Length: 139
Image (tube, rainbow, N blue to C red; front, side):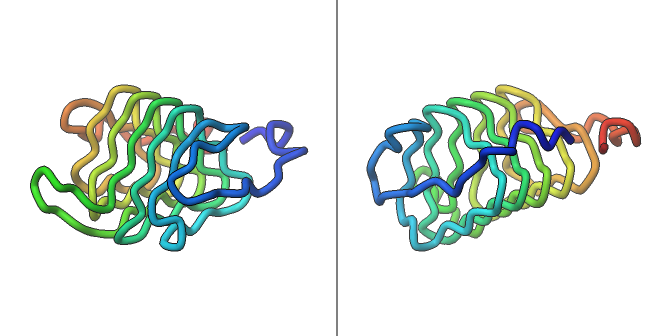
Protein backbone atom coordinates (compact mmCIF):
# COMPACT_ATOMS: atom_id res chain seq x y z
CA UNK A 1 0.00 0.00 0.00
CA UNK A 2 1.35 3.38 -0.96
CA UNK A 3 1.73 5.71 2.00
CA UNK A 4 2.27 8.69 -0.34
CA UNK A 5 -1.45 9.09 -1.06
CA UNK A 6 -2.06 9.67 2.65
CA UNK A 7 0.86 11.99 3.48
CA UNK A 8 -1.39 15.06 3.81
CA UNK A 9 -4.50 13.19 5.00
CA UNK A 10 -6.71 14.88 7.60
CA UNK A 11 -9.86 13.54 9.24
CA UNK A 12 -12.84 14.94 7.31
CA UNK A 13 -15.40 16.98 9.21
CA UNK A 14 -18.71 15.22 8.67
CA UNK A 15 -22.02 17.00 9.10
CA UNK A 16 -25.41 15.28 9.38
CA UNK A 17 -27.28 14.97 6.05
CA UNK A 18 -25.04 17.54 4.40
CA UNK A 19 -22.94 16.96 1.32
CA UNK A 20 -19.28 17.24 2.29
CA UNK A 21 -18.01 20.36 0.47
CA UNK A 22 -14.61 18.89 -0.42
CA UNK A 23 -15.27 15.18 -0.83
CA UNK A 24 -18.93 15.25 -1.92
CA UNK A 25 -20.26 12.38 0.18
CA UNK A 26 -23.29 12.36 2.44
CA UNK A 27 -23.75 10.64 5.82
CA UNK A 28 -26.98 10.00 7.72
CA UNK A 29 -26.76 9.22 11.46
CA UNK A 30 -23.16 10.42 11.67
CA UNK A 31 -23.06 9.65 15.40
CA UNK A 32 -23.10 5.95 14.45
CA UNK A 33 -20.22 6.24 11.97
CA UNK A 34 -16.76 5.17 13.12
CA UNK A 35 -14.18 6.36 10.63
CA UNK A 36 -10.61 5.06 10.73
CA UNK A 37 -7.52 7.03 9.85
CA UNK A 38 -6.22 7.55 6.34
CA UNK A 39 -9.46 6.49 4.70
CA UNK A 40 -10.28 7.48 1.13
CA UNK A 41 -13.98 7.99 0.47
CA UNK A 42 -14.72 8.88 -3.15
CA UNK A 43 -17.14 11.47 -4.45
CA UNK A 44 -20.91 11.09 -4.43
CA UNK A 45 -21.14 8.32 -1.83
CA UNK A 46 -24.06 7.79 0.52
CA UNK A 47 -23.56 6.26 3.98
CA UNK A 48 -26.57 5.34 6.13
CA UNK A 49 -25.16 4.62 9.59
CA UNK A 50 -28.46 4.24 11.46
CA UNK A 51 -27.40 0.85 12.85
CA UNK A 52 -23.67 1.52 12.75
CA UNK A 53 -21.01 1.74 10.06
CA UNK A 54 -17.36 1.12 10.91
CA UNK A 55 -14.80 2.05 8.28
CA UNK A 56 -11.34 0.83 9.24
CA UNK A 57 -7.93 2.39 8.71
CA UNK A 58 -6.69 2.73 5.12
CA UNK A 59 -10.07 1.75 3.62
CA UNK A 60 -10.72 3.01 0.10
CA UNK A 61 -14.24 3.51 -1.24
CA UNK A 62 -14.66 4.40 -4.92
CA UNK A 63 -17.09 7.01 -6.16
CA UNK A 64 -20.86 6.62 -6.31
CA UNK A 65 -21.10 3.86 -3.66
CA UNK A 66 -23.90 3.34 -1.15
CA UNK A 67 -23.49 1.78 2.28
CA UNK A 68 -26.67 0.89 4.15
CA UNK A 69 -27.00 -0.22 7.76
CA UNK A 70 -30.77 0.07 7.39
CA UNK A 71 -32.81 -0.97 4.36
CA UNK A 72 -36.41 0.17 4.05
CA UNK A 73 -36.96 -2.05 0.99
CA UNK A 74 -36.52 -5.41 2.74
CA UNK A 75 -36.39 -4.22 6.38
CA UNK A 76 -32.87 -5.57 6.94
CA UNK A 77 -30.87 -3.85 9.64
CA UNK A 78 -27.33 -4.33 10.91
CA UNK A 79 -23.93 -2.83 11.40
CA UNK A 80 -21.67 -2.62 8.34
CA UNK A 81 -17.95 -3.16 8.89
CA UNK A 82 -15.25 -2.44 6.32
CA UNK A 83 -12.08 -3.79 7.88
CA UNK A 84 -8.56 -2.36 7.57
CA UNK A 85 -7.34 -1.83 4.00
CA UNK A 86 -10.59 -3.05 2.40
CA UNK A 87 -11.25 -1.56 -1.03
CA UNK A 88 -14.71 -1.01 -2.47
CA UNK A 89 -14.99 -0.40 -6.23
CA UNK A 90 -17.01 2.44 -7.72
CA UNK A 91 -20.79 2.18 -7.98
CA UNK A 92 -20.97 -0.68 -5.45
CA UNK A 93 -23.69 -1.19 -2.83
CA UNK A 94 -23.03 -2.66 0.63
CA UNK A 95 -26.13 -3.87 2.45
CA UNK A 96 -26.95 -4.04 6.20
CA UNK A 97 -25.11 -6.48 8.44
CA UNK A 98 -22.21 -7.05 6.03
CA UNK A 99 -18.53 -7.26 7.00
CA UNK A 100 -15.84 -6.91 4.34
CA UNK A 101 -12.65 -8.53 5.59
CA UNK A 102 -9.22 -6.98 5.95
CA UNK A 103 -7.40 -6.33 2.64
CA UNK A 104 -10.31 -7.59 0.54
CA UNK A 105 -11.21 -5.97 -2.77
CA UNK A 106 -14.79 -5.56 -3.98
CA UNK A 107 -14.94 -5.00 -7.73
CA UNK A 108 -16.82 -2.09 -9.26
CA UNK A 109 -20.59 -2.33 -9.71
CA UNK A 110 -20.96 -5.02 -7.04
CA UNK A 111 -23.91 -5.72 -4.74
CA UNK A 112 -22.56 -6.95 -1.40
CA UNK A 113 -25.28 -8.63 0.66
CA UNK A 114 -23.16 -11.24 2.50
CA UNK A 115 -19.92 -11.17 4.46
CA UNK A 116 -16.71 -11.21 2.44
CA UNK A 117 -13.71 -12.85 4.15
CA UNK A 118 -10.24 -11.29 4.47
CA UNK A 119 -7.67 -11.25 1.66
CA UNK A 120 -9.97 -12.03 -1.29
CA UNK A 121 -11.23 -10.49 -4.52
CA UNK A 122 -15.02 -10.50 -4.82
CA UNK A 123 -17.39 -8.96 -7.31
CA UNK A 124 -20.76 -9.33 -9.00
CA UNK A 125 -24.47 -9.12 -8.34
CA UNK A 126 -24.55 -10.52 -5.73
CA UNK A 127 -20.83 -10.27 -4.92
CA UNK A 128 -19.06 -13.62 -4.76
CA UNK A 129 -15.48 -14.50 -3.88
CA UNK A 130 -13.52 -15.05 -7.08
CA UNK A 131 -10.10 -15.84 -5.63
CA UNK A 132 -7.67 -15.27 -2.78
CA UNK A 133 -5.34 -12.33 -3.20
CA UNK A 134 -1.69 -12.99 -3.95
CA UNK A 135 0.95 -11.85 -1.47
CA UNK A 136 2.08 -9.00 -3.74
CA UNK A 137 -1.52 -7.72 -3.88
CA UNK A 138 -1.56 -7.46 -0.09
CA UNK A 139 1.52 -5.24 0.19
